Amino acid sequence: MPIAWYFDFVSMFSWLQWQSIRELAERREVALRPILFGALLKEMGQRGPAEIPRKREFTYRYAQWRARQAGIPLRFPPAHPFNPLPALRLCIAAGTSVEAVGAIFEWIWAHGRPADTAEALEPLAASLGIADVRVALAAPEVKTRLQANFEQAMGQQVFGVPTLAIGDELFWGADAHGFAMDYLAHPDLFAEGEMDRLGHLPVGLSRV
Image (spheres, rainbow, N blue to C red):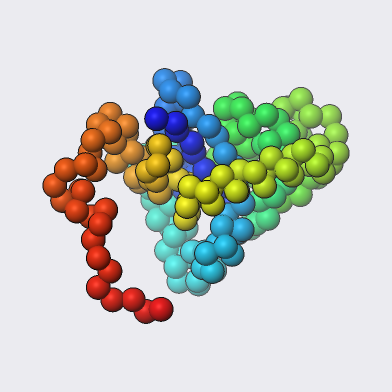
């Protein structure tokens, strides 16, 4: 089954899942697909967790707790949410390699550095072999690739980040990684009993 990971650098939960994705990519082919989370929210007509004051506070502290429990370094950048477009485009300009994705995540979430402008990312871009970060981020092919990633996400009905897509099934959130790995090992997991029934459960009440 094809495997794709949809993520945005603005998401601290994408960072919390990253090491598991890196390890998975050592064993299986994983398509790394950076997408703009804000565009996803707009498409679905939803607000993000950071746009709801008390949910924002809870989400940040929960992420910090999760990181401590897992032994993952987590230091928030100077402001959040921030504009992730420069980081997303840098990732694509650098080939969306495991090395590039890891370096950008570490820049933002392990070291708490800003990533919302070309100027802020200039030292990181240089370390990735990109001499002129402004030219790289403005390249039409970079913008086209990012849009194509988003369209692929829409085609698979992705509804959040991070999402690990295994075949036609979506596993949303860093905390669903174990669930995803169980499905990968047992592709018939959803084919029997209550798991199968849940795929066809009628809607009893709708607010629309």
